Amino acid sequence: MQPVLIVGAGPVGLTTALGLAYYGIPFLIFEEDGSLSLDTKAGTILTRTLEAFRRYGVADAVLERALRVEEIGEIERETNVAHASVRTAVLREETRYPFVVNLPQHHLEPILREAVEQAPQGRLLMQHRLVSFRSEAGGVVAEFDTPHGRQCFEGSYLLACDGGRSTVRAQCGVPVDGVSLDVRYMLVDLKVDLDVANPRDYPYLAYFSDAQEWMILVRQPHCWRFLYPLAGDADEPTDEALRSKVLRFIGNVDKVELLGRVTYRVHHRIARQWRRERVFLMGDAAHLITPMWALGLNTGVLDAISLPWRLAWVLRGWADSSLLDGYEREQRPVAADGAGEMAEAARHHMAMQGQDNPAAAVHEWGHAYTRTLLGVRLDISGSGDWSMIRNEAEPPPLRVGERIPDFLLHGPAGRPVRLHDLVDDCFLALYFADVRRQPGIPHNTSPALRHFVVSRWDAPLDSGLRDRALLDVGNHLRDRLGVPDGTLVLVRPDDHVAAIVPIAAQRAEDLYASIVGARAPQGSST
Image (cartoon, rainbow, N blue to C red; front, top):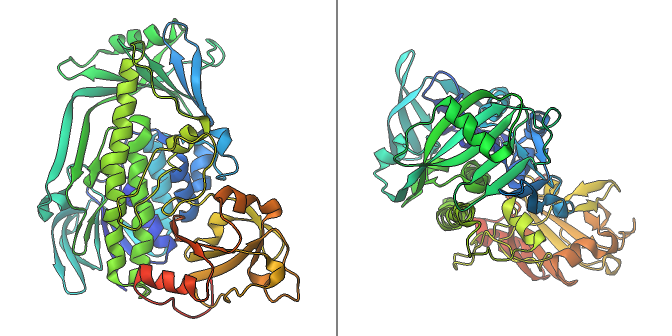
Protein backbone atom coordinates (compact mmCIF):
# COMPACT_ATOMS: atom_id res chain seq x y z
CA MET A 1 0.00 0.00 0.00
CA GLN A 2 1.42 3.39 -1.00
CA PRO A 3 1.65 5.96 1.80
CA VAL A 4 -0.62 8.97 2.13
CA LEU A 5 1.44 12.15 1.67
CA ILE A 6 0.73 14.96 4.15
CA VAL A 7 2.14 18.44 3.48
CA GLY A 8 2.48 20.50 6.66
CA ALA A 9 3.30 19.43 10.22
CA GLY A 10 1.10 21.79 12.17
CA PRO A 11 -1.57 20.49 14.57
CA VAL A 12 -3.95 19.41 11.79
CA GLY A 13 -1.24 17.65 9.78
CA LEU A 14 0.16 15.89 12.83
CA THR A 15 -3.30 14.86 14.05
CA THR A 16 -4.18 13.55 10.59
CA ALA A 17 -0.97 11.50 10.56
CA LEU A 18 -1.92 10.01 13.93
CA GLY A 19 -5.37 9.23 12.56
CA LEU A 20 -3.91 7.36 9.60
CA ALA A 21 -1.50 5.54 11.91
CA TYR A 22 -4.42 4.50 14.12
CA TYR A 23 -6.14 2.91 11.12
CA GLY A 24 -2.90 1.24 10.03
CA ILE A 25 -2.44 3.39 6.91
CA PRO A 26 1.16 4.27 5.95
CA PHE A 27 1.97 7.97 5.69
CA LEU A 28 4.75 10.46 5.05
CA ILE A 29 4.40 13.93 6.55
CA PHE A 30 6.53 16.78 5.22
CA GLU A 31 7.42 20.04 6.97
CA GLU A 32 9.17 22.89 5.19
CA ASP A 33 10.88 24.29 8.27
CA GLY A 34 13.65 22.70 10.29
CA SER A 35 11.65 22.87 13.53
CA LEU A 36 8.07 23.15 14.69
CA SER A 37 6.62 26.60 15.28
CA LEU A 38 7.53 28.36 18.53
CA ASP A 39 5.10 31.25 17.96
CA THR A 40 2.44 32.07 20.53
CA LYS A 41 -0.70 30.63 18.94
CA ALA A 42 -3.98 28.86 19.73
CA GLY A 43 -4.30 27.85 23.34
CA THR A 44 -7.65 26.13 24.00
CA ILE A 45 -8.48 22.56 22.98
CA LEU A 46 -12.18 21.72 22.94
CA THR A 47 -13.84 18.50 24.08
CA ARG A 48 -14.45 17.11 20.59
CA THR A 49 -10.74 17.48 19.84
CA LEU A 50 -9.90 15.61 23.05
CA GLU A 51 -12.16 12.78 21.86
CA ALA A 52 -10.17 12.62 18.64
CA PHE A 53 -6.91 12.63 20.59
CA ARG A 54 -8.24 9.73 22.69
CA ARG A 55 -8.96 7.66 19.61
CA TYR A 56 -5.58 8.48 18.08
CA GLY A 57 -3.69 7.68 21.30
CA VAL A 58 -2.46 11.07 22.55
CA ALA A 59 -5.18 12.31 24.92
CA ASP A 60 -3.36 11.22 28.08
CA ALA A 61 -0.13 12.90 27.03
CA VAL A 62 -2.01 16.12 26.21
CA LEU A 63 -3.93 16.12 29.49
CA GLU A 64 -0.72 15.57 31.44
CA ARG A 65 0.58 18.93 30.18
CA ALA A 66 -2.68 20.87 29.95
CA LEU A 67 -4.91 22.80 32.33
CA ARG A 68 -8.48 21.46 32.51
CA VAL A 69 -11.27 24.03 32.44
CA GLU A 70 -14.87 23.32 33.46
CA GLU A 71 -16.06 26.95 33.58
CA ILE A 72 -16.04 29.41 30.70
CA GLY A 73 -17.07 32.75 32.14
CA GLU A 74 -17.80 36.33 31.24
CA ILE A 75 -16.52 39.11 33.47
CA GLU A 76 -18.25 42.44 33.97
CA ARG A 77 -15.74 45.13 33.22
CA GLU A 78 -17.05 47.51 35.88
CA THR A 79 -17.28 45.05 38.80
CA ASN A 80 -14.59 42.53 37.76
CA VAL A 81 -17.04 39.76 38.72
CA ALA A 82 -17.64 36.67 36.60
CA HIS A 83 -21.20 35.89 35.45
CA ALA A 84 -23.07 34.01 32.71
CA SER A 85 -20.65 31.11 32.93
CA VAL A 86 -20.78 28.00 30.77
CA ARG A 87 -20.38 25.02 33.11
CA THR A 88 -19.20 22.00 31.19
CA ALA A 89 -20.00 19.73 34.14
CA VAL A 90 -23.50 19.34 32.67
CA LEU A 91 -21.85 17.13 30.01
CA ARG A 92 -20.37 14.61 32.44
CA GLU A 93 -22.61 11.78 31.16
CA GLU A 94 -22.14 12.76 27.51
CA THR A 95 -18.37 12.46 27.33
CA ARG A 96 -15.41 11.21 29.34
CA TYR A 97 -13.95 14.73 28.94
CA PRO A 98 -16.56 17.11 30.44
CA PHE A 99 -14.16 20.05 30.17
CA VAL A 100 -11.99 21.93 27.72
CA VAL A 101 -8.25 22.34 28.21
CA ASN A 102 -5.80 25.20 27.88
CA LEU A 103 -2.48 24.33 26.28
CA PRO A 104 -0.47 26.62 23.97
CA GLN A 105 -0.05 25.33 20.45
CA HIS A 106 3.74 25.38 20.69
CA HIS A 107 3.39 23.01 23.67
CA LEU A 108 0.82 20.82 21.91
CA GLU A 109 2.80 20.29 18.72
CA PRO A 110 5.80 18.53 20.36
CA ILE A 111 3.40 16.05 22.00
CA LEU A 112 1.82 15.26 18.64
CA ARG A 113 5.22 15.13 16.95
CA GLU A 114 6.60 12.63 19.47
CA ALA A 115 3.59 10.36 18.90
CA VAL A 116 3.97 10.64 15.11
CA GLU A 117 7.66 9.78 15.29
CA GLN A 118 6.86 6.69 17.34
CA ALA A 119 4.23 5.48 14.86
CA PRO A 120 5.60 2.56 12.82
CA GLN A 121 3.27 3.37 9.93
CA GLY A 122 5.08 6.53 8.81
CA ARG A 123 7.80 9.15 8.99
CA LEU A 124 8.06 12.89 9.63
CA LEU A 125 10.45 14.58 7.20
CA MET A 126 11.63 18.06 8.19
CA GLN A 127 13.14 20.64 5.81
CA HIS A 128 11.16 19.26 2.90
CA ARG A 129 9.62 22.08 0.86
CA LEU A 130 6.98 21.12 -1.67
CA VAL A 131 7.91 22.14 -5.22
CA SER A 132 5.25 20.46 -7.32
CA PHE A 133 2.95 17.46 -7.52
CA ARG A 134 0.91 15.60 -10.07
CA SER A 135 -1.82 13.00 -10.06
CA GLU A 136 -1.19 9.73 -11.83
CA ALA A 137 -3.22 6.58 -12.33
CA GLY A 138 -3.66 5.13 -8.87
CA GLY A 139 -1.70 7.76 -6.96
CA VAL A 140 0.21 11.04 -6.73
CA VAL A 141 3.84 12.06 -7.14
CA ALA A 142 5.20 15.02 -5.16
CA GLU A 143 8.56 16.72 -5.57
CA PHE A 144 10.35 18.38 -2.66
CA ASP A 145 13.45 20.44 -2.07
CA THR A 146 15.32 18.66 0.73
CA PRO A 147 18.70 18.93 2.49
CA HIS A 148 19.81 16.16 0.12
CA GLY A 149 18.61 17.83 -3.05
CA ARG A 150 15.37 17.54 -4.95
CA GLN A 151 13.49 14.28 -4.30
CA CYS A 152 10.25 12.73 -5.50
CA PHE A 153 7.84 10.72 -3.34
CA GLU A 154 4.96 8.56 -4.51
CA GLY A 155 1.76 8.21 -2.55
CA SER A 156 -1.87 7.17 -2.76
CA TYR A 157 -3.29 10.58 -1.84
CA LEU A 158 -1.94 14.03 -0.99
CA LEU A 159 -3.37 15.98 1.96
CA ALA A 160 -2.74 19.73 2.13
CA CYS A 161 -2.28 20.77 5.76
CA ASP A 162 0.05 23.62 4.81
CA GLY A 163 -1.86 26.57 6.21
CA GLY A 164 -3.66 29.66 4.98
CA ARG A 165 -1.06 30.33 2.27
CA SER A 166 -1.21 26.75 1.05
CA THR A 167 1.19 25.86 -1.75
CA VAL A 168 -0.96 22.84 -2.60
CA ARG A 169 -4.13 24.93 -2.89
CA ALA A 170 -2.35 27.50 -5.06
CA GLN A 171 -0.97 24.84 -7.41
CA CYS A 172 -4.42 23.28 -7.66
CA GLY A 173 -5.73 26.67 -8.75
CA VAL A 174 -8.53 26.58 -6.18
CA PRO A 175 -9.96 30.08 -5.54
CA VAL A 176 -10.59 31.31 -2.00
CA ASP A 177 -13.71 33.29 -1.12
CA GLY A 178 -14.15 35.55 1.88
CA VAL A 179 -12.68 38.60 3.53
CA SER A 180 -9.80 39.74 5.66
CA LEU A 181 -11.26 42.00 8.32
CA ASP A 182 -9.81 45.39 9.13
CA VAL A 183 -8.90 44.34 12.63
CA ARG A 184 -5.98 42.57 14.24
CA TYR A 185 -5.70 40.55 17.42
CA MET A 186 -2.91 41.01 19.92
CA LEU A 187 -2.07 37.87 21.87
CA VAL A 188 0.18 38.30 24.91
CA ASP A 189 1.55 35.75 27.38
CA LEU A 190 2.36 37.21 30.79
CA LYS A 191 3.82 35.83 33.98
CA VAL A 192 1.66 37.30 36.72
CA ASP A 193 0.50 35.83 40.03
CA LEU A 194 -3.29 36.12 40.17
CA ASP A 195 -3.64 33.12 42.45
CA VAL A 196 -1.74 33.95 45.66
CA ALA A 197 0.03 37.31 45.71
CA ASN A 198 -2.79 39.08 43.85
CA PRO A 199 -5.74 36.69 44.20
CA ARG A 200 -8.48 36.93 41.60
CA ASP A 201 -11.48 34.64 41.16
CA TYR A 202 -11.32 34.57 37.38
CA PRO A 203 -12.41 31.45 35.51
CA TYR A 204 -9.52 29.79 33.68
CA LEU A 205 -11.19 30.89 30.42
CA ALA A 206 -12.96 34.24 30.66
CA TYR A 207 -14.24 37.04 28.47
CA PHE A 208 -14.10 40.68 29.57
CA SER A 209 -17.04 42.03 27.57
CA ASP A 210 -17.28 45.74 27.01
CA ALA A 211 -18.64 48.01 24.28
CA GLN A 212 -15.51 50.19 24.32
CA GLU A 213 -12.82 47.64 24.97
CA TRP A 214 -12.89 43.84 25.36
CA MET A 215 -10.36 41.19 26.22
CA ILE A 216 -10.14 37.41 26.55
CA LEU A 217 -8.30 35.96 29.53
CA VAL A 218 -6.87 32.44 29.38
CA ARG A 219 -5.08 30.70 32.25
CA GLN A 220 -2.40 28.61 30.60
CA PRO A 221 -0.56 25.88 32.53
CA HIS A 222 2.46 28.15 33.03
CA CYS A 223 1.18 31.72 32.58
CA TRP A 224 -1.79 33.95 31.83
CA ARG A 225 -2.70 34.78 28.25
CA PHE A 226 -4.48 37.98 27.19
CA LEU A 227 -6.07 38.50 23.77
CA TYR A 228 -7.67 41.72 22.59
CA PRO A 229 -8.47 43.52 19.31
CA LEU A 230 -6.12 46.01 17.73
CA ALA A 231 -7.35 48.47 15.11
CA GLY A 232 -6.06 47.78 11.64
CA ASP A 233 -4.18 51.07 11.45
CA ALA A 234 -2.91 51.08 15.04
CA ASP A 235 0.80 50.99 15.77
CA GLU A 236 2.32 47.90 17.34
CA PRO A 237 2.09 48.55 21.11
CA THR A 238 5.19 48.77 23.25
CA ASP A 239 5.80 46.39 26.14
CA GLU A 240 4.81 49.14 28.57
CA ALA A 241 1.61 49.82 26.63
CA LEU A 242 0.76 46.10 26.82
CA ARG A 243 1.34 46.10 30.57
CA SER A 244 -0.87 49.16 31.04
CA LYS A 245 -3.60 47.62 28.90
CA VAL A 246 -3.67 44.45 31.00
CA LEU A 247 -3.74 46.40 34.26
CA ARG A 248 -6.75 48.38 33.05
CA PHE A 249 -8.66 45.09 33.04
CA ILE A 250 -7.31 43.22 36.05
CA GLY A 251 -6.26 46.07 38.34
CA ASN A 252 -2.92 46.62 40.03
CA VAL A 253 -0.62 43.67 40.64
CA ASP A 254 2.84 43.36 42.12
CA LYS A 255 4.79 42.11 39.11
CA VAL A 256 4.14 41.45 35.41
CA GLU A 257 6.67 39.73 33.14
CA LEU A 258 6.20 39.60 29.36
CA LEU A 259 6.84 36.06 28.03
CA GLY A 260 5.71 36.36 24.43
CA ARG A 261 3.51 38.27 22.03
CA VAL A 262 2.13 37.97 18.53
CA THR A 263 -0.17 40.05 16.35
CA TYR A 264 -2.27 38.46 13.63
CA ARG A 265 -4.99 39.47 11.23
CA VAL A 266 -8.56 38.22 11.30
CA HIS A 267 -9.82 36.32 8.26
CA HIS A 268 -12.86 34.44 7.08
CA ARG A 269 -11.70 32.77 3.88
CA ILE A 270 -12.95 29.45 2.50
CA ALA A 271 -11.59 27.45 -0.44
CA ARG A 272 -14.22 26.82 -3.10
CA GLN A 273 -13.19 23.20 -3.47
CA TRP A 274 -11.62 20.90 -0.91
CA ARG A 275 -10.83 18.03 -3.27
CA ARG A 276 -9.15 17.74 -6.63
CA GLU A 277 -8.96 14.08 -7.61
CA ARG A 278 -6.48 12.58 -5.10
CA VAL A 279 -5.65 15.89 -3.40
CA PHE A 280 -7.55 17.12 -0.32
CA LEU A 281 -7.40 20.48 1.48
CA MET A 282 -7.56 20.41 5.29
CA GLY A 283 -7.40 22.89 8.17
CA ASP A 284 -6.37 26.46 7.29
CA ALA A 285 -5.64 25.42 3.71
CA ALA A 286 -9.38 24.80 3.34
CA HIS A 287 -10.82 27.32 5.78
CA LEU A 288 -9.19 30.26 7.54
CA ILE A 289 -11.63 31.63 10.09
CA THR A 290 -11.54 33.96 13.07
CA PRO A 291 -10.25 32.08 16.14
CA MET A 292 -12.93 33.30 18.54
CA TRP A 293 -14.27 30.58 20.84
CA ALA A 294 -11.18 28.50 19.94
CA LEU A 295 -12.73 27.52 16.61
CA GLY A 296 -9.62 27.85 14.44
CA LEU A 297 -7.51 24.85 15.45
CA ASN A 298 -10.48 22.81 16.68
CA THR A 299 -12.41 23.15 13.43
CA GLY A 300 -9.31 21.90 11.66
CA VAL A 301 -9.28 18.83 13.89
CA LEU A 302 -12.86 18.12 12.76
CA ASP A 303 -11.32 17.60 9.30
CA ALA A 304 -8.80 15.20 10.85
CA ILE A 305 -11.70 13.25 12.36
CA SER A 306 -13.62 13.02 9.08
CA LEU A 307 -11.01 12.14 6.44
CA PRO A 308 -8.68 9.44 7.90
CA TRP A 309 -11.35 6.76 8.41
CA ARG A 310 -12.66 7.33 4.88
CA LEU A 311 -9.17 6.94 3.43
CA ALA A 312 -8.69 3.80 5.52
CA TRP A 313 -11.89 2.20 4.24
CA VAL A 314 -10.96 2.95 0.62
CA LEU A 315 -7.32 1.91 0.89
CA ARG A 316 -8.27 -1.34 2.66
CA GLY A 317 -10.60 -2.12 -0.21
CA TRP A 318 -13.63 -1.91 2.05
CA ALA A 319 -15.30 1.02 0.29
CA ASP A 320 -15.78 2.63 -3.07
CA SER A 321 -13.84 5.86 -3.63
CA SER A 322 -17.16 7.74 -3.60
CA LEU A 323 -17.00 7.51 0.21
CA LEU A 324 -14.37 10.26 0.03
CA ASP A 325 -16.90 12.69 -1.45
CA GLY A 326 -18.59 12.97 1.93
CA TYR A 327 -15.58 14.75 3.43
CA GLU A 328 -16.13 18.07 1.65
CA ARG A 329 -19.91 17.75 1.58
CA GLU A 330 -20.10 17.38 5.36
CA GLN A 331 -17.19 19.48 6.59
CA ARG A 332 -17.33 22.49 4.30
CA PRO A 333 -20.61 23.97 5.58
CA VAL A 334 -19.50 23.41 9.18
CA ALA A 335 -16.36 25.50 8.64
CA ALA A 336 -17.66 27.97 6.07
CA ASP A 337 -21.00 28.81 7.62
CA GLY A 338 -21.24 27.28 11.08
CA ALA A 339 -17.82 28.00 12.60
CA GLY A 340 -17.56 31.29 10.77
CA GLU A 341 -20.93 32.47 12.03
CA MET A 342 -20.19 31.31 15.56
CA ALA A 343 -16.83 33.08 15.60
CA GLU A 344 -18.23 36.30 14.17
CA ALA A 345 -21.19 36.19 16.56
CA ALA A 346 -18.76 35.82 19.45
CA ARG A 347 -16.65 38.72 18.22
CA HIS A 348 -19.75 40.88 17.78
CA HIS A 349 -21.08 39.88 21.19
CA MET A 350 -17.82 40.91 22.84
CA ALA A 351 -17.85 44.29 21.16
CA MET A 352 -21.54 45.03 21.86
CA GLN A 353 -21.66 44.36 25.58
CA GLY A 354 -22.98 47.31 27.51
CA GLN A 355 -25.20 48.45 24.64
CA ASP A 356 -28.91 47.90 24.29
CA ASN A 357 -28.46 44.68 22.35
CA PRO A 358 -28.85 41.76 24.75
CA ALA A 359 -27.62 38.38 23.57
CA ALA A 360 -30.21 35.74 22.88
CA ALA A 361 -30.88 33.46 25.81
CA VAL A 362 -29.04 30.16 25.54
CA HIS A 363 -29.77 27.24 27.84
CA GLU A 364 -26.98 25.82 29.94
CA TRP A 365 -26.89 22.34 28.37
CA GLY A 366 -27.14 23.61 24.82
CA HIS A 367 -24.53 26.31 25.39
CA ALA A 368 -22.07 23.79 26.84
CA TYR A 369 -22.71 21.35 23.99
CA THR A 370 -22.14 24.10 21.43
CA ARG A 371 -19.02 25.58 22.99
CA THR A 372 -17.29 22.18 23.26
CA LEU A 373 -18.06 21.30 19.60
CA LEU A 374 -20.00 18.22 20.69
CA GLY A 375 -23.15 19.60 19.10
CA VAL A 376 -22.06 19.41 15.46
CA ARG A 377 -24.68 17.71 13.30
CA LEU A 378 -23.29 16.72 9.90
CA ASP A 379 -25.22 16.74 6.64
CA ILE A 380 -24.83 13.02 6.07
CA SER A 381 -27.69 12.74 3.58
CA GLY A 382 -26.71 15.76 1.48
CA SER A 383 -30.08 17.41 2.14
CA GLY A 384 -28.63 20.54 3.75
CA ASP A 385 -29.67 19.49 7.26
CA TRP A 386 -26.70 20.36 9.49
CA SER A 387 -26.02 22.49 12.55
CA MET A 388 -23.34 23.55 15.02
CA ILE A 389 -25.49 25.32 17.59
CA ARG A 390 -27.63 23.67 20.28
CA ASN A 391 -30.22 25.77 22.11
CA GLU A 392 -31.97 23.04 24.10
CA ALA A 393 -32.27 23.12 27.88
CA GLU A 394 -31.79 19.35 28.02
CA PRO A 395 -30.79 16.65 25.56
CA PRO A 396 -33.35 16.18 22.77
CA PRO A 397 -33.93 12.91 20.87
CA LEU A 398 -30.98 11.81 18.75
CA ARG A 399 -30.95 12.81 15.07
CA VAL A 400 -29.09 11.44 12.08
CA GLY A 401 -25.77 13.24 11.63
CA GLU A 402 -25.25 13.96 15.32
CA ARG A 403 -22.37 12.60 17.37
CA ILE A 404 -23.60 9.77 19.59
CA PRO A 405 -22.90 10.43 23.29
CA ASP A 406 -20.00 8.52 24.84
CA PHE A 407 -22.23 6.79 27.38
CA LEU A 408 -21.09 4.23 29.92
CA LEU A 409 -22.62 0.77 29.44
CA HIS A 410 -21.79 -2.73 30.68
CA GLY A 411 -20.22 -5.04 28.16
CA PRO A 412 -20.48 -8.79 27.48
CA ALA A 413 -17.74 -9.60 30.01
CA GLY A 414 -19.51 -7.60 32.69
CA ARG A 415 -17.03 -4.74 32.72
CA PRO A 416 -18.07 -1.12 32.08
CA VAL A 417 -17.49 -0.02 28.50
CA ARG A 418 -17.66 3.36 26.82
CA LEU A 419 -19.75 3.64 23.69
CA HIS A 420 -17.02 5.38 21.69
CA ASP A 421 -14.61 2.53 22.45
CA LEU A 422 -17.00 0.17 20.67
CA VAL A 423 -17.08 2.28 17.50
CA ASP A 424 -13.30 2.63 17.21
CA ASP A 425 -12.31 1.46 13.71
CA CYS A 426 -15.70 0.07 12.73
CA PHE A 427 -19.33 0.85 12.02
CA LEU A 428 -21.49 0.02 15.04
CA ALA A 429 -25.05 -1.29 14.81
CA LEU A 430 -26.98 -0.84 18.07
CA TYR A 431 -30.25 -2.79 18.35
CA PHE A 432 -32.49 -1.47 21.11
CA ALA A 433 -34.62 -4.47 22.06
CA ASP A 434 -35.73 -6.70 24.93
CA VAL A 435 -32.93 -9.24 25.09
CA ARG A 436 -35.20 -11.72 26.89
CA ARG A 437 -37.13 -12.20 23.64
CA GLN A 438 -33.91 -13.29 21.90
CA PRO A 439 -34.05 -10.86 18.93
CA GLY A 440 -32.20 -11.89 15.79
CA ILE A 441 -28.92 -9.98 16.16
CA PRO A 442 -26.24 -10.84 13.55
CA HIS A 443 -23.00 -12.40 14.70
CA ASN A 444 -19.86 -10.27 14.62
CA THR A 445 -18.01 -11.79 11.68
CA SER A 446 -16.74 -8.59 10.03
CA PRO A 447 -14.02 -6.20 11.23
CA ALA A 448 -15.88 -3.35 9.53
CA LEU A 449 -19.37 -3.72 11.05
CA ARG A 450 -20.16 -4.84 14.60
CA HIS A 451 -23.58 -5.62 16.08
CA PHE A 452 -24.81 -5.26 19.69
CA VAL A 453 -28.20 -5.52 21.30
CA VAL A 454 -28.82 -2.85 23.96
CA SER A 455 -31.24 -3.77 26.74
CA ARG A 456 -31.93 -3.07 30.39
CA TRP A 457 -32.15 -6.86 30.79
CA ASP A 458 -28.92 -8.81 31.02
CA ALA A 459 -28.51 -11.50 28.35
CA PRO A 460 -28.78 -15.00 29.89
CA LEU A 461 -25.90 -17.35 29.17
CA ASP A 462 -28.22 -19.67 27.24
CA SER A 463 -29.67 -16.89 25.06
CA GLY A 464 -26.95 -17.05 22.42
CA LEU A 465 -26.58 -13.24 22.67
CA ARG A 466 -24.21 -12.87 25.60
CA ASP A 467 -21.19 -12.08 23.39
CA ARG A 468 -22.94 -9.16 21.69
CA ALA A 469 -25.19 -7.72 24.40
CA LEU A 470 -24.79 -4.40 26.21
CA LEU A 471 -26.51 -3.84 29.54
CA ASP A 472 -28.20 -0.43 29.64
CA VAL A 473 -29.14 -0.10 33.32
CA GLY A 474 -32.53 1.59 33.63
CA ASN A 475 -32.72 2.15 29.87
CA HIS A 476 -30.49 5.16 30.46
CA LEU A 477 -28.95 5.29 26.98
CA ARG A 478 -32.21 4.42 25.24
CA ASP A 479 -34.02 7.24 27.03
CA ARG A 480 -31.16 9.69 26.35
CA LEU A 481 -31.34 8.92 22.65
CA GLY A 482 -35.13 9.09 22.66
CA VAL A 483 -35.61 5.86 20.70
CA PRO A 484 -38.14 3.09 21.41
CA ASP A 485 -37.45 -0.62 21.56
CA GLY A 486 -37.30 -2.03 18.06
CA THR A 487 -34.90 0.69 16.84
CA LEU A 488 -31.60 0.22 15.02
CA VAL A 489 -29.01 3.01 15.36
CA LEU A 490 -26.06 2.76 12.95
CA VAL A 491 -22.96 4.72 14.00
CA ARG A 492 -19.97 5.53 11.78
CA PRO A 493 -16.30 5.27 12.86
CA ASP A 494 -16.27 9.05 13.50
CA ASP A 495 -19.04 8.66 16.17
CA HIS A 496 -21.68 10.27 13.95
CA VAL A 497 -25.04 8.57 13.50
CA ALA A 498 -25.64 7.30 9.97
CA ALA A 499 -29.18 5.97 10.41
CA ILE A 500 -32.03 5.56 12.92
CA VAL A 501 -34.50 2.99 11.56
CA PRO A 502 -36.75 0.14 12.70
CA ILE A 503 -34.99 -3.19 13.21
CA ALA A 504 -35.32 -5.55 10.25
CA ALA A 505 -33.40 -8.48 8.84
CA GLN A 506 -30.21 -7.43 7.00
CA ARG A 507 -31.07 -3.76 7.63
CA ALA A 508 -27.67 -2.84 9.14
CA GLU A 509 -25.77 -4.67 6.40
CA ASP A 510 -27.80 -2.97 3.67
CA LEU A 511 -27.34 0.47 5.22
CA TYR A 512 -23.62 -0.08 5.57
CA ALA A 513 -23.33 -1.13 1.91
CA SER A 514 -25.27 1.92 0.75
CA ILE A 515 -22.88 4.22 2.66
CA VAL A 516 -19.53 2.74 1.63
CA GLY A 517 -20.52 1.26 -1.72
CA ALA A 518 -19.58 -2.30 -0.74
CA ARG A 519 -20.61 -5.13 1.53
CA ALA A 520 -18.80 -5.49 4.83
CA PRO A 521 -15.71 -7.71 4.52
CA GLN A 522 -15.88 -11.01 6.35
CA GLY A 523 -13.26 -12.27 8.76
CA SER A 524 -12.42 -12.08 12.43
CA SER A 525 -14.18 -9.13 14.04
CA THR A 526 -12.15 -6.46 15.79
